[in-house]
Amino acid sequence: MNDSRLRSGLSLWQVVIIGIAYMTPMTVFDTFGIVSGVTEGRVPMAYLLALVAVLLTALSYGRLVKLYPEAGSAYTYARGTCGSQFGFLVGWSSLLDYILLPMINSLLSGIYLRSLFPHIPPALFIMAFTLLVAFINCRNIKLLANLNVIFVGLPVILMGIFIYLVIQGVSHHAGSGHVWTLAPLLNGNASVLPLIGGAAMLCFSFLGFDAVTTLSGDTRNPGKIIPRAIFITALSGGLIFFVAAWFIQLYYPNNAQFKNPDEAMPEIVLYVGGKFFQSVFLVAILVNTFASALASHASAARLLNIMGRDNIFPQKFFGYNHPQTHSPLYCILFVSGISMTAVFFNLDTAVSLISFGALVAFSSVNISVLMHFAVLKKQINSLREGINNVVMPLLGLLTVAVMWFNLDKDALELGLTWAALGAAYLVYCKLTNKVVVLSEV
Image (cartoon, rainbow, N blue to C red; front, side, top):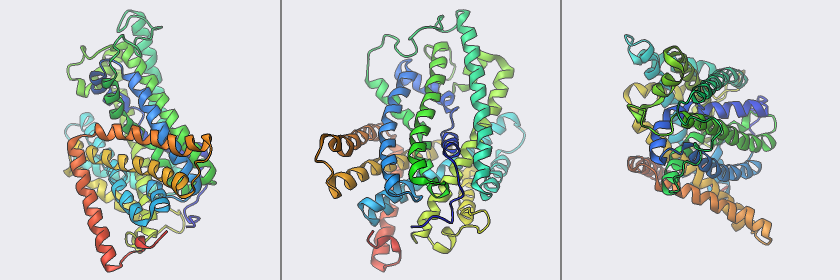
């Protein structure tokens, strides 16, 4: 399929910035108290394990994008290697991840802005936030990439200031009492299962590496740029998470100081930097949420666009691209409409559905590598081919299986319900011969 209509020349680093924005680096502060409790004070080690697991699947993504440089991510890869019907089910399930994350960002914007302006209804914030995100996305993708440099840069700078304040505090005997120590990584606890559980929870912080594959149609040379962007995004995000977690753990060896470990972020920043720094940090988190909203909105619209051009969804609407900006205009507006429903949702339900969609995508990509290289091409005759085409994707599948095992029960039930609806739609299409998705690839 020719994606020239969408290609507007994003560079490698512009794609990476969008991916990092999607990952929302400051989420490490939101999840720290929860993961510290699960891992018994070893959050940095859990991030390392999560990074290794994610990089295994990222390698599979990188290999497949060279074969299928068009946009569409896991849907495109599954369709090309395992058939159109399997691809449809993967794309349908992955939509939970792509479409609901913009809605979560809109929901978070209402929560954060309500804390700054308590007398204004959060629904107004959600609507204004979503409309602004949609307006920017309707412009050329380069505008979004350039804005994200600012929106990602500001929170990272504040994280640097936070690290400086932690070093100052620890030097005066706060927290661990020693700056040069391995205590945040190895605190003497040798139990492994809590670390695996914590790593499984943290893997979902890395979703941006998957999202950059939807930008294939917007890059100058997708077969070369996107594989590198996938790896750099995952590695860069992992390093940001690890460094931030290291210094938070240095100051807070355990959760004893938190009144509410599940919502520890305000306390983390308050005790380290004081009231004013806490207020500035809250603004930075809102900016980070805006950056994530821009990136996730763009990714969701492009996945819908490629599925529309495949005639899975009505082509005239979802397959349309604006002639001047080359943006999938109607898809952007559709995602905006979904995001507006944040006024009726709670955070837990939406997050659960995202987890299911992400795991479907991760699983299918590793399966697609096995299917294409080991089964179809039979490239397993040498040790190198065996490692690349069998061992590595199987290791990727194993790490994803661990995440499936740790998936919340409600997330599994809701996700399976959504997948069942997709299967029913597929059966209907097969019986009525309605859509192109059922044709052979």
